[in-house]
Length: 357
Image (cartoon, rainbow, N blue to C red; front, top):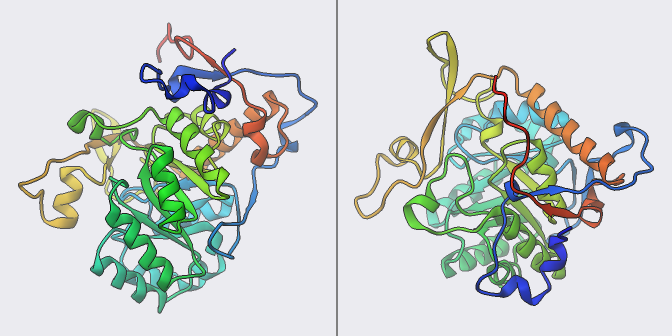
C-alpha cells in the first residue's frame, strides 16, 4: 500500500528521480466502514478563508470558467445542486444584469472571472457596481509570473473583503507565494491536464495532477488557505481522488460539456449529435475572443466534438452519487475529512476494458 500523503513530507518526494502520479496511476483502497448508506454522507462544506472574512457554504465542485462550460445556463442548473459555476471572463454584462436577483441570492455558487491587466480590472470594478458577488477568480495559464502576484495585490486592495482565487500553478513554492505575497485565499492547481489543453504537448511543461494537488494542498493548508484541483477529471472517481489528495474544491470542464446548458448548436453527423468544446487557449477561442492568434505565440488548446448528453442534471447526479459511494467505501461521513480516510495504491490499470460498447 502506498500512502501518497505521507510521501509529501519524505525525502523520496523531492528526489529528482521521483515519479509523479496522475489520477490514472492510483486507486483508493477501501477500508472497514460503519456507514450503512450513501444517504449518511454529507458532501457540503463550510469554508472560512485566510484573507477574507466572507464564508462559503456549498458542495465544492465547480463548473470550469470556459466559454463552453462556465455559462449562465450552467449556473442556473448547478446552483440547485449546491455546487458552483465559475463564469467565463467573456460573459456579457447584459447576462449579469438580467440575472442580478438570482445571482445575489446565490453568491455561494458562482465566481466572477478576470484575466490580467488594466482592462480586466476595470471590468471587475464596473461589474461590482451592477451586482454583488463574493468570489473573484484571477485566471491565467501561467501562474508563475510576478505580474500575477502584483495584480492579485491590487485586486485585494480594491476588494479587501472578497474571496480571491488565482492560478494556475503546480508546486508548493508558487502556492505559498500567491497566498503570502498575493494575499490569495484559494490557489488554482493544474497545468496541462485538461482534455482540451495541449500545453504539455506544445511546451513540455506541466505536472501530473494527483502529485500537483498533493504538493500544493499541503503547502496551502499549512498557511490556512485552500486549493482547487483544476484539470484531469475523466470520471467521478477522479473527483474522489482529487479530494482524497487534499483538494478543497474540484473544477470540472470536459465532463460538464455536451449538455443542453452548454452554448452552441447541435451538430448532427451519421445519426449522432455533438456539441463543440474547446480550450481557452485554443485557436478557436482566440479567434472568437481576440480576433486571432498573435504571431509570437501558438495555440495551446484544441476544439473537440463532444457527444450530446442531454440535461446536465443527470451528469451532476452521477458525479455526486459516485463521490458519496467513495465516502462509504472509506468510512468517511463528511467530505471535508476525506483526505484523512484515503490511502492510495499504485496500479497498472484502472478497470477491465476487455469489452467495449
